[in-house]
Amino acid sequence: MSLSIGIVGLPNVGKSTLFQILTKKQVSAENYPFCTIEPNVGGVPVPDQRLDVLAQISKSAKVIPTTIEFIDIAGLVKGASKGEGLGNAFLANIRQVDAICHVIRVFHNDDITHVENRINPIEDADIINTELLLADLDQITKALPQVEKKAKSKDKLALETLPILQKILPRIEAGTPIRDAELAPEELEIIKSYNFLTAKPMMYVANTDETYQLSPELQDKFTNIIPLSIKIESEICLMEAEEQTEYLTMLGREMSGLDTLIQEGYKLLDLISFLTTGVQETKAWTVKQGTLAPQAGGVIHSDIERGFIMADIISYQDFVDCGSEVGARQNGKLRQEGKSYIIQDGDVCHFKFNV
Figure 1 (tube, rainbow, N blue to C red):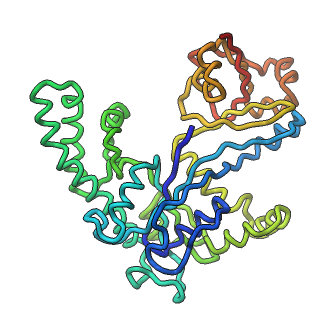
Figure 2 (cartoon, rainbow, N blue to C red; figure 1 turned 45 degrees about the vertical axis):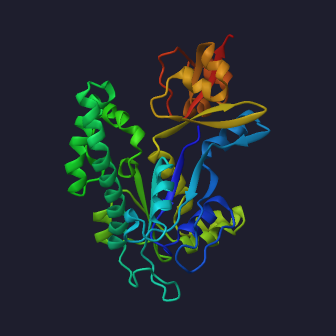
Figure 3 (cartoon, rainbow, N blue to C red; figure 1 turned 90 degrees about the vertical axis):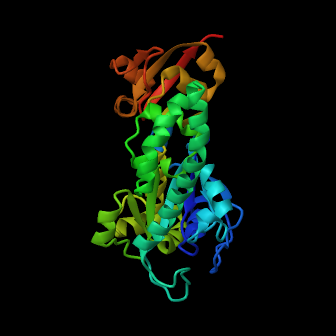
């Protein structure tokens, strides 16, 4: 399952540096606007301590985490929806991602220029959010006459689509993104092909100084925000694993801000992991929340979905508490589930199939 998060923000807020340390790729991160032109793409392992625990129990030769894809997208400026700066390319690149990681600058540093010549993270966020709204408004305004015409000729899809577009148009005009327009899941599915920018789930990363502190104003304004000193995180990445652990313990944190960001990004995409474990490998597999057992098996191999019989399921904690699959079976913690079973995060699975 290839799902992606686009890293967006004004020029020089730290997007490319964040991407660099997320993916350990050396991408251009210079101190001038539009340093990033073509989007950089990188797969990022999702930290999951459960894998190491299971691998130790199963004496696995390999541990394979699941990954999500991060994309570093060109910096945006006012007027992007009208093609200013790299606006057209920027918006086209955002349309291709599944969710948005919106970086705003909180830190002060006179040596790093700001495209607006000031530090105001709320105004920065408003610039980008306004451009996304304007782009969606333009798209809806252009689409409506065509949809209305098709609806008059009783086109089924147009008849379903028209009331939804009419419903979201005034909300967009009032500054409400589609993700907050209280659309039903089936309504969102009907307009999915439009790839509206403000329909995509969004999280904020506040690029702070070394304190990782947010002002009460920022905390009130953005509920889905992660404070992150990209400068400090880049230094942590250079440390050996043991040194990292000691440093984070000294800071009173269980994991780096970077790992928190990756995990939150995974949740933002509405993803969960089920696990498989054995002598050869312990591996995490990615599925959407609400996935049924046969389709989860299909992520491993299409034959499993096609010939699905049942799945042996042990919850992660039960597997650990019982010390093995055999122990879980002996203690009545192994369940056999059929085609209607919804996979849960942390399920340790063994699929049975016949083709």
